[in-house]
Amino acid sequence: MRRTPFLLRRLHALTGVVPLSLFFVEHVWTNAAALGGRAHFDAAVGEIQALPGLWALEIFGIFLPLAFHAVYGIFIARNAKTNVDKYPYGRNWAYYLQRASGIVILLFLLVHLWELRVQKAIGGLDDGDFYDLLASSFGRLTFGVPVRAIAYLVGLAATAFHFSNGLVGATQSFGLVVTRPAQRRVAWAAGALGTMLFFVGAATVLHLATGLFRV
Image (cartoon, rainbow, N blue to C red; front, side, top):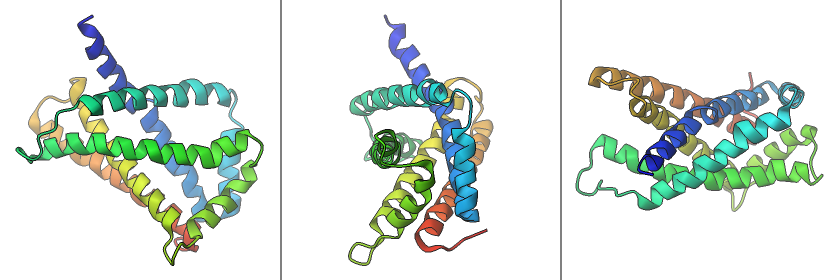
């Protein structure tokens, strides 16, 4: 019984790296096809939808790991003891922000899934409607402010941070890097990758909202 929390935390870390991190990278890459215009975006979505056994991949490779990662992540966050007020060190802040960003991501994903996947499942959307829906949603102004686009940028930033910081934590948790110099190198590499993914995703959102950044 004493090993149960240890194994659950290991499984939580593992589901964060594989397959959810791979899904995040793939999702940003596929959506970035919108930078080439609607035809490129529709083609990229079509390639994903044409994958054999897609339903099984999504259920067992994405949704179930995501559900476990989210539920156990909430348990960890509720029981976490943060001390950034007394010890405002970098790793303490990273630990705190990892939990806070997880809550932001959960809300972000619930809205995202409702708007796209649930609406498609109940028959309100077709694959060819995604581009227009996203462009209309991101470009819509509320009191002169693109609220939905800003919300997606916040969700994207939280996801990119959670992704890169989670990679650092996982490599240390599984004993893949043990020396301080190696840990710093991994932190810089993961931070650079997360930053790159954020900028690619942000360019996609801004393109859909304004038509800028077309490639």
